[in-house]
Length: 335
Image (cartoon, one colour):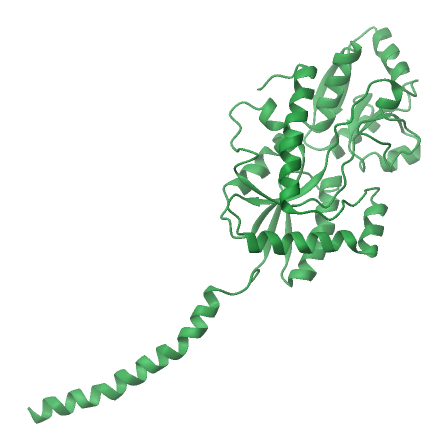
């Protein structure tokens, strides 16, 4: 019996030491589980190709967030299907703040009207975070060989053409596509749509002469406008574009079209409020920086005004209804 008691007494100190060690690890383990956000790289998925206005804006925001959050924010380009590919990826991601969507407005406000069996709900499957850009429009352009300088001349040129002409945009359901279809419905123009994966590709093919008319984004057309290889005809949205101040809006030319596009940051649904608030605060700080405002201006973009995540959510709901009316007028049906 004595030997048994001795064995137990020998084990007790070892057990006590082990428990003490584990107890000492408790705070460290707990800290690892509740480490402040972020504690690893963040992936920012976007639905546009490299070089597009969405891409360049996203990279500006990602760069500044990386500095502010002290963790890399990596841009992941997933173009195609008018943003559906990128949006669906984020809608299915874990709501932990490490997978974000930086997108243009059509992915959430237009796709529900034109896409049958859309794999995400724009209001239920995403958490609004911040809107870095001010609302803006797109640019209707033609090759320099087309002898038109305004909408009236373009309409006459299309009507007089002995063959059906084509225009390009960055995809079915894109802002460029719907605006042109709206314009066609209002004027009776007959034009065939040629969809591309990106505004950059559309603009490049316009310059190459594969198409003669295009609705493109604010940035893709800049070098070609400057070189004179393409010419601006009209700007959509409520005001003239920084890239082409001499090009009047559709409204100035008698066909009002005030629906604007924007760029914004979202997370998956159920993203925790502390993460949303942190990202929103950092995004708003970027917009208030004189240095970053100059970088926006260099890209011919207007930075948005600081706003809350809730205000972005209200904007999505309002624009969802407004673009629904555009789709109805344009006669575009779900596919």
